[in-house]
Structures are given as C-alpha cells and as structure tokens.
Length: 382
Ligand code: ADP
Ligand code: GN1
Ligand code: MG
Image 1 (tube, rainbow, N blue to C red):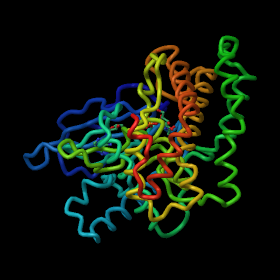
Image 2 (cartoon, rainbow, N blue to C red):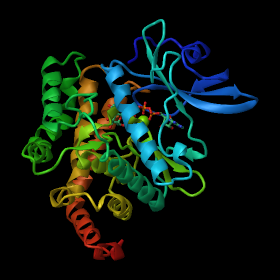
Image 3 (cartoon, protein in one colour):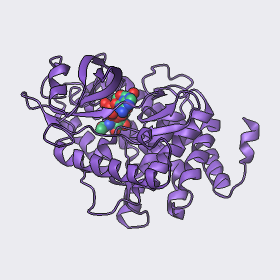
Image 4 (cartoon, rainbow, N blue to C red):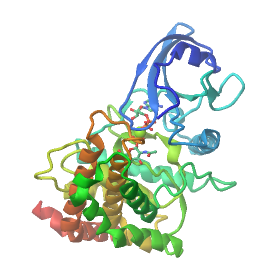
C-alpha cells in the first residue's frame, strides 16, 4: 500500500514535472495489483496528449530511487539501441520517463509519495485475458526481445528492487512463518491449500538450485511478465512495448517465460473462481514457445530450454504461495477487491499447478519439437 490512500491531486503532481503542457483531467487507469496508475490528458500547444502518472507503491518497492535508476538505465539503453537499429517508431517501443522539474526520473509530493510520469503508448493495449494464439505469440516475442535488448546493457549490475523476488524456497519459508504467526486467525480453514504448497517443497528448490550452482545463468530479466505488462498494437497485435519495469533486475529467463505460461495459457484467468474444468491450452502454450524462441533462441542455453515447460509450473506455484501468504497475513501486499480475493487467487493458481502437472509431458514435447525447428506431433490431436 502507498503511504496515503487519499485521491491524489493530479494537477499538483503534474506541476512537479517538466511537462511543458497544461493539465486537463486525470482518472484511475488499468488493473495492476501494485501501483496506483492514472491516465491524464494535457493540452500541449493546442493538442491533447495523454500521459501515465504512477504513484510507486513504496510498501512493496522500498528503494524507489534505486528502482527509478534501473528504469532510466534500461529504457535509455533500449531507446538508443532501437534508434541505432533504425526503428521508425522507437519512442513507442520503450517506456519514456518525463523528468521532474529538478531533472530526476521521479518526484516526491508533499506527503512523501514517489511519482513518475511516462509517455502514454497510444493505439496499443494490455490484455488481462489473452484472446488469440497470435496475441500469445506476439507477447512472448516482445518479452524475449526485451531480454535480448537488456542483455546489451553495460555498466554495474542493476539494483535488486525486491531482494529474493523469485527465490521460491524463501517464498515457501515466508508462507511457513505466516502460518506460524497466523496474525489474522485464518490458518485453521486452509489445510488443503497449505498442504498443497508444503508438499511441493522440492519443486520450489529445483530451478533455484540450478541457478545457485551456475548451471542456469543470471540475466537482466523483467520478472513480472504477466500478459497485461506488454502492450499489443490495437491494429496488428504486434507486441509494441513491454511496461511495468519495476522488477527489471538480475534474474532468470525462466522466471519470465514461466510467468507468461502462468498468465497466457490457463483456460480461466487468474481472477476466475470457476475451477471445475481449469486446464492448460496446449495450442496457446505452443504459440508462447514459438514467440519466445523466435526472439530468444539465439541466446538461451540448453539447461534453460530443458526447463521452459517446468518454469510454468514453478511460477504458478510461487504466485499461489504468495497469494496464500498474503491472505494469512491479512491482505497487506496485493490489492484486493473482496475479502477472500487472495484465497480465491491462491486456489486458482494451485488448480492450475495441478493442471500443468497432468500435462507436463505434452508441454515438454512441444518445447522439444519447437527447439529443434519441428512441429509438435501432439498438436495435430488438439
Ligand atoms: P502495476 O505495477 O500496478 O501492474 P503497471 O505499470 O502495469 O502497474 O500499469 C498499470 C496499467 O496501466 C497497465 O496494465 C497498462 O494498461 C497501463 N499502462 C502503464 N504504462 C503505460 C503506458 N506508458 N502507456 C499506456 N498504458 C500504460
Ligand atoms: C503483481 O504489478 P502486477 O499487477 O503486474 C506482482 C507479480 C504477481 C502478479 C500476480 C511487484 O503484478 O509478481 O505475479 O501481481 N508484482 C509484484 O497477478 O509483486
Ligand atoms: Mg502491471
């Protein structure tokens, strides 16, 4: 949660930035679980121009200055590379921070809130639910290209904006601690969910251990590749711009691919409570694999390819554990819209983990075939 929940005076926030335009109006925007996002329209020499104003959630991101330094570095690098490659609409393909009046990529309001303003990427949308395989392909390719661009970032290692963000064994430890504390007296009713998580301790450690041993390399990754964190062109469906860069930091390519599987391939979205027939769409999984490999084939190592399918299970399990922990702690992290929202989300994620467990051999076959440039034979049966 941000330090204040009062509706902000966006006109006054805008004055903290070097806008060179007059504020007209602003309203809450998007469906992110973390930051407070607003879309605001400004009059710029007689033209109406939209911007994204965001109050950074400093309960979640405790080092906002370091976070914005990361974002500045990554977006400047991306822009430079896109321009050097002759990209005709480079400004649409990476976030652009508007500087504050004192030249920083953020500003602090009188209440101590941290704000930033981005150029609005027009004629493109984030989708909470993916509708077509083409969208899945394009989104995965965009995230793969993002990793490719970020790989060329020189200089110091990026700051870890949330330490141990995808350290799944530590996420399980946090669940154990929340269970012991039981600060909201909710644990008694949660035995099936708690057992589900604790029975999968070995799963939580698998990729973590490969990274710790050096078998899987550290890369600059996005770490929150939920499908609504890439904007797709409204006309062509092409993945135009990867957004929500708060967690861009050292990580694993598998975290990014796994979170795409988690959000793009279930037959029901994360927020659904209808879990009776929840399954993975293998045709959509195939599109994700194709899109991601089209961008990332050149740099992925064999150990990463071997774990692409499994990463979907890991990231879904981890996310379910995080929702359950937050529910046990009294809903202090994720924004909720109803009292048992986090529990519902946890049940959804665990049901999807179970679906992946049933389908993992078929997923592995798809990855194997596509890695070798072949069409997976099982797709003919779908
Ligand atoms: P959160 O961290 O809370 O998920 P995001 O950075 O993802 O916040 O932003 C929330 C939503 O705002 C996104 O899902 C997207 O719809 C929209 N959005 C964010 N940045 C832009 C941008 N530069 N242009 C257009 N829409 C944006
Ligand atoms: C949050 O910020 P948003 O809504 O894109 C969360 C992700 C979770 C996701 C679950 C910084 O993503 O890690 O996977 O919710 N982001 C952070 O929907 O914790
Ligand atoms: Mg988001």
